Amino acid sequence: MSSIADNIGSVTRRIQKATLKAGRSAGSVHLLAVSKTRPADELRTAYSAGQRAFGENYVQEALDKMEELKELDAIEWHFIGPIQSNKTRQIAGAFAWAHSVDRLKIAQRLNDQRPSTLPPLNICLQVNINNEESKSGCTLKDLTNMADAIEEMPNLSLRGLMAIPDPDQPEAELRSSFRKLANALKHMRQEAPGCGPLDTLSMGMSGDLEMAIEEGATWVRVGTCLLYTSPSPRDGLLS
Image (cartoon, rainbow, N blue to C red; front, top):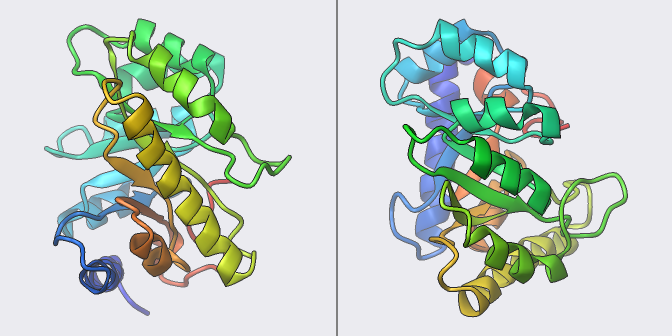
């Protein structure tokens, strides 16, 4: 069985190889370890192996881990699960990133509840890229209006877009989904240039991270093949 350190090294090499193959600059793609349901000691082991960014889906579980790991400098917490209105205050106060902002009501609450002692919360707008009934996310046509509104929210930094395409769709359709999200970000930069850095595409998991990187991903979300010793075929899924 491989260790967590071995797993992180393996995935990191895949990212580096795919980044180079895509003609992109070294370090332009970051690994987000999807750590939901994993105990704090596994995260500590991953941290010791060099991993710094961790993605959580469940607020209370994440807060418990933050308390257990509070001595670790430079650890970075990303919220990647569905955001409920009654959880925004905790997310706004504890996380550096929220990848799954899917409506203006949530963005406004995060802005209003972000403590003044913290820098702006980095957010991505979650897009339901294939209009799947079972998936959360705004539509592509909503993006410009949402970006314009978020421009007036000083406690948020709109970094870009996130999507969770169906990993079981044919390869050509999956690539099309990634490309569609990348093109949407380019359009936002043109239509709403002052609304934030707009430098982030959060897309791709263990089975398709090379393809996602080819299409412009800057964060790839990888879970069980990092923190489990027996990888699951559902690795990286957020549900």
